[in-house]
Amino acid sequence: MSVNVVTNLEVKSHNSPDETRRPDKTVLDLVTVGDYTIGRMTFEPGWTWADCIKPVVGTDSCELSHVGFCLSGNLEVETNDGGKISISAGDSYSIPPGHNAHVVGDQPFQGVEFVSGAEFARPAE
Image (cartoon, rainbow, N blue to C red; front, side, top):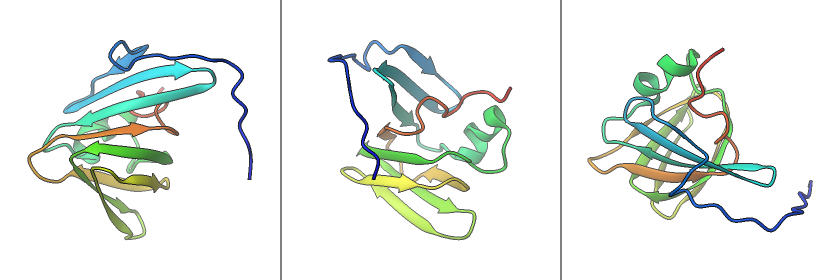
């Protein structure tokens, strides 16, 4: 198992993010501390990866790895090979590349991402 070593004492607030991305029904607030970019994401009711993020990134499914924590709301994720999970408030999760997702219910999904924040919803080059 690899070990990451943090060398600086630092704090930043997602209330004053370094960057904000706003695709349809999406708010992604990013802060970078040391070598890490952490994303706070909010997906509004009706959000789907296919409708809101696919047009931005241009891939058939999400090709990022995700590790995060759900603060509120519900998200259903389905992998390209048919695996499914439901993520709810208080859940930590990992999601491999090759998936789609959608918000379930009438409450926004809010989560914190530790792995893919820097790349999520970044326009294709």
